[in-house]
Image (cartoon, rainbow, N blue to C red; front, side):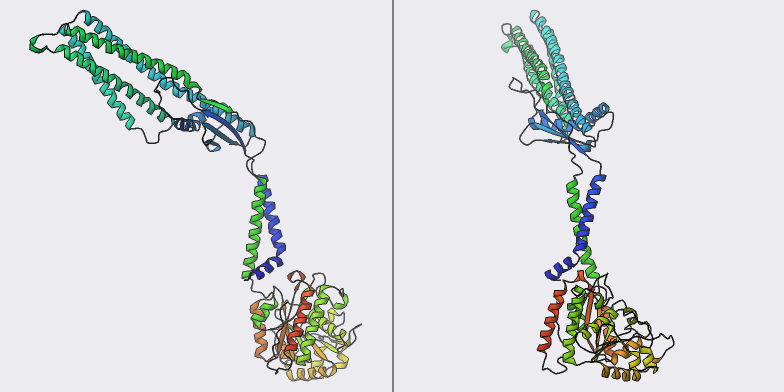
Length: 608
């Protein structure tokens, strides 16, 4: 299908496209109205921690790690459970979105809910609970660390007291006891260091909030133990030195006392270091309480974030438009009917002599009852002009109008063609050839008596069977006659031929409203005609039906001259298009002048 054909197809079905567009938009608006509105409350939190004054920090966490910890903690089951208890209803983690603003230490928390007030309340409670949990988590770690340091200070002070006693009473026994205590302390420290190494190694590569805090705690304890281990080992060396004899069997001057004094000094250093660490822990615990702060509280939103009516409207409109276009294309692809003169010429090999417009209010009416300037009247005039031009070349006196399918409007076409021909000054006989179901007498408001059947039976002559049409000079009507179920007059083809010969003597043109194409009398009558025209209803007559009808007539030698297409005004561009067709037909026929009968047997009439 070419682009112009596609555009024309869409234009012919523009009402369905508009309908699909309107329906889609309506459905989109309806769906948006039926959806439960969702509101979004937003709050912002600043996450940081106060830097310690010492060169090293007890809790070795970067700002990024601290942000990640708080983000995980905010959506943790513990925090959500506490918020739900305060709200008195369940809070879903899926309705909470937490993200960090780029290049800042600000966390943005969004809460979705059907109630705007509830969304804001949940957001604010979530921040408050996060601050409490953050304080509890870090403060608990500092408390545990402080307790461990205090225990170590107590042990050091006990050992310092022992050394003070040993200094006053230096003896081998006391030195050995002190050495045993130091050795025990070293072994204990080694065990603790080994246990911490194993615990640190067991942490996952991507720890959660609590695991990150615990990992930092373990690492700090390990560093503290390693520092103490060094001092203990130095004390052990001093005590071992005291217990060894001097060179040449001579002892040094007060060697034990000097070593004990040195060892006491080391213990004091350890004690001072532990006291300093404990003070740092207490200071850090105090400072850590203010590392999460709400800077923008959540307020109830005024506008919903879902559904968005304009979005539903646009999506519905686009969907309706696409579905309408797809439906039109599918229907057109599956449609096997004839729709244009081009299709008729391509598929049937017949020229289209005209397009007869139909209006549902003026369907099957005569020209005398139509508006002279209407599109229907203009289409019949153009059709009559085309037939007259062809008749001037072909010189036919009998013309039968027959339907390609039973539903096509052959009777109105035949009657109005006769009226047009008579109005143009010709002598016309209009004959109702449908003996089983005649229609012309109803169209002209006459009784169906003394008609074609009586002529075939020899009961009447042409003069008595003919009736002049009122107000139309030169036009005579022969109705179908009284219907007889068991009549066999149509079988006498010779009688038909004689009768048609007599009719041709009485008029310039005999137009026959033919019977249905699939009955035997239609084929017999068509074989006696000078020309046969097929009526094809645009968009209704199937290709296979039209081909079967044409093939049936061609087998009996009927002279099928062309076709006439009829349909609604919406299917075509207007009466001007038919006038253009008539002009093209005139030019085409003139170009065939002077050719042989075989050459002009199928005149080409261009499609409008």
